[in-house]
Image (cartoon, rainbow, N blue to C red; front, top):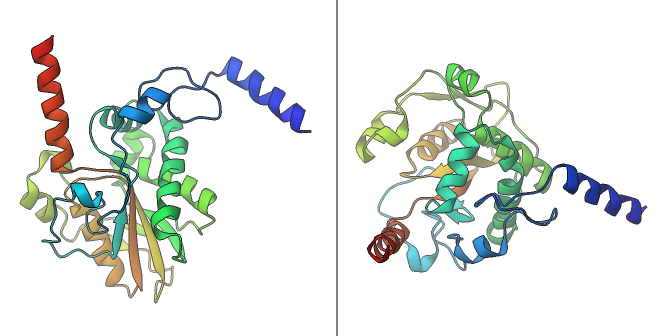
Length: 252
C-alpha cells in the first residue's frame, strides 16, 4: 500500500510539478518552498511579541495601542518574496497557495499557542460584491485549511461585513481605523458566549481590521480572540529589505 502511494505521488508530481510558493522554482512534491527561499525569506523565528506578532528582537510596537484580541502570531514578515507570494494568491487567482501557507500558519499556531483549546476558527470577511468579483476570499481558504489541519470547528460567515469600504492599503493609519467603524457584525445564530475564537487573515499591517473584528466578537461575549495571519508588516524588517535593495541597485 505504501509503495502504491509513493508511485501515485511520483506520477502526480510528473503530471503536476510542485513549485516553491515564493520563487516558483520546481521542488520536491513533499515540500512547500525551496532550499534557497528557506534561507532568504523573512520567517519569524524564536520568541515573539504576541501584541504585534513580530520576533521580540524585531518588535516595534511597544504595546502602544489597545487591541481587541489576546494574542497574535504569524510565520512570516510581509516583505520580499512573501509580498509577491501573497499578491499572486489574492490577485492572480493562485488559490493553491492556501494549502502551503496554511501549513506554515498551523505550525506557528502549534508552536506558540498549542496549549489553547479553540471552540471555532473563523476569518476576516470580504464585502459580498468584492468576493464575487475576486471569486474567493483568501482568508476563508486559509481558515478552511487550518480547520482541517488543527481539528478546530470551522465557523463559516461568523463575522459579516455589512457594507463596502475603501481598500485598507490605500488608507493612512488613522484612516484605516475610521474606515472600519461599524462595518462588521456577527451571525447571531452561533452562540459565542465564553467561546475561544481563532481569527484568520492573510496579512496584519496596522491591525485595524483584526482589531475591529475582535471588538465585535467581544461585544458578543466571547471569552478570547487569538489572531493568526500568514504575514505581519514590520518597520524594522522593511528598513532592512529597503537597505538591501538599495545596495543591490548601487552594485548593479
